Amino acid sequence: MREKVIILIIGITLLIIITGILTFTNKEEGNILKKIANLFESNNQEKKTEDKPSGDNTGGGTPDSSSSSSGTSSGGGGSSSSGGNTPPECETKPISYSLLKINKTETCNTNEGEICTNKTILCSLDIQNREDITNGNFKVELKFLGEGQNINEPIKTIVYEVFLEPQAKQHLESSTTVQSTGENGLANQIVNCFYKTLEVPEKCID
Image 1 (cartoon, rainbow, N blue to C red):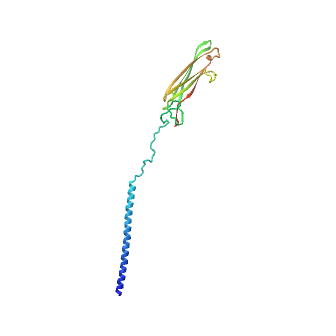
Image 2 (spheres, one colour):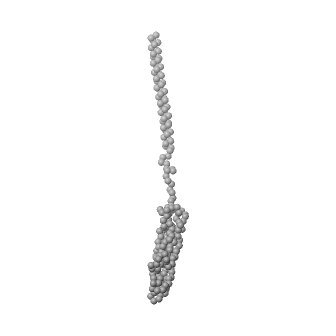
Image 3 (cartoon, helix red, strand yellow):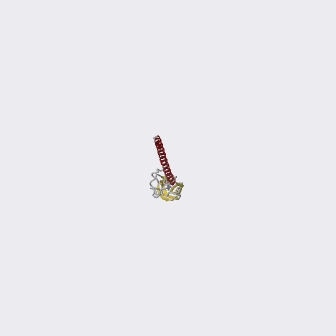
């Protein structure tokens, strides 16, 4: 009877040991399988990361834009109110130009002693477009005025309208003849030439 009890105890002990060993083995197998799965998942993520291009600038920069500079100025076509090639949709300013070689010649045609009674006055100048790109229409006014004469009451007024290409120059010249009698007569006085620019092409402000 005692031997049976000992055998039973030994059997139960062996059963417990075997059960523990099997349980431990199942846990280890589960951990091993989980580790293997995690390893595969990690490898897949690394592969995806490697396949993705790094530092891709596609769409990240601003494409080169031509510009033209205006102002150019840039901006194409269109004309200013003065007939130049200035685009209308920009802030503008008059272009650079010069009035050069302003000259006056007085010639007495008829004398009465030391008094001139008939005189011709010749006025001339050059107008130059100093721009490298912009062309356009220029309008210049010339007034012949006697000494001390009101500018609003000239002897004669002439208006020139010229179209100038960039860096182009044009000579303007006009004359008038006056007649009078006596020492204080207009022909015996100094007559001057007064110029006023009425219209200048415009260009876009850079």
